[in-house]
Length: 206
Image (tube, rainbow, N blue to C red; front, side, top):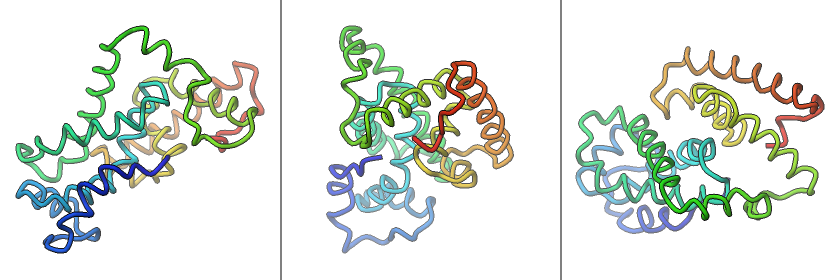
């Protein structure tokens, strides 16, 4: 995914010198510092969780809309983080905000949604040949056709490059459920691609 710089600069670049935390701090330490008004701490949380938010949105909205919506999610989360009671629940809390933002997206103009769904509007950052982009689009659509419990782990694993333990840590799911959902989701993805007559399609294209 493309590195989203705007929030990173506005949240983390300023006040980092006086921050009581660093990139190596635990999630709980960063959340507590962010709740106390440490903007750099929230910037570090942004860097740590942007991939998860990107992946969650990618399972739900047109790819071209994802980058802007990632920033929307963090803009919404920043003033609300002070109300989060359990710092250890930050990942699941943020994931819920991302899912709700995707729902809100589809409450907007239907005509805009149709325009965003057109293949030619996919992000230019998806480099590669036309055939590679078409194949990646096919795989993405196949993943998005799967049950929700499989879509998110697969996108986070195949697109965002997160490991099973990282997915569990970021989303708040158990390691066991992530492992099972990745295994079953991959099985269903292979079946979906084969049923579509594309048995040669490689998930590595994502």
